[in-house]
Length: 276
Image (cartoon, rainbow, N blue to C red; front, side):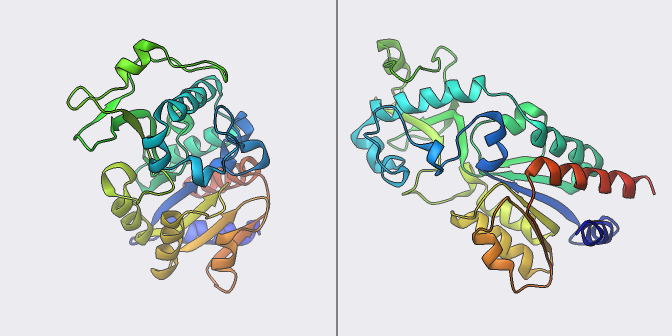
């Protein structure tokens, strides 16, 4: 596997066209930081959710009917994200970016901000940013979540001040987190849909790290890379929907290691090639 990986990395590194190195990450890369995966048994939606499935609770429809409940949960997650520390996988990706510079891009489905905190700069957050808000009624503009609004414990309610700050100044409706919910569609403004697909088209290698392919834009990114001759490197601890996509393809490498182990190998290979 290492020889095959070295060969394809060297080939793309020396190419003139379609020579981007793109990384696509998901919840698995943040599990080491103590953030529960989205759909895993440890990822159950906790406060006030009545143990709904994420696909029921994590919707714009549910927010419209239960805005305070969703905001309580969102602020509980905010505290979890802020208390989490970046891990080795995040830092290995930064080292890889430092070698590749403008030929590196990271597409993440995570809204926890850990990649940015680790130091990644060339970053597309395709599921939005939990640290931003926008009007649920469609008033234009995306704002930062007010600094006065703090993360919550599981049993902590919104304060009157929180509620005041979470209402739109233009129309008085609730503001909402600037993230993608299950009943919404990817766009360019929040989700970088077209930029991500263009990047995939020009990627010599797409490294898929810690994600199963359960949402449609990541799958479209992988399909686009394959269509234009790029190689998919599937780095996960078990088979997933991406594995099914690439199993009959020639331009693929499947790695069943932790993200940290695999990323350390990739970093070392790139370092050696850059010094040749």
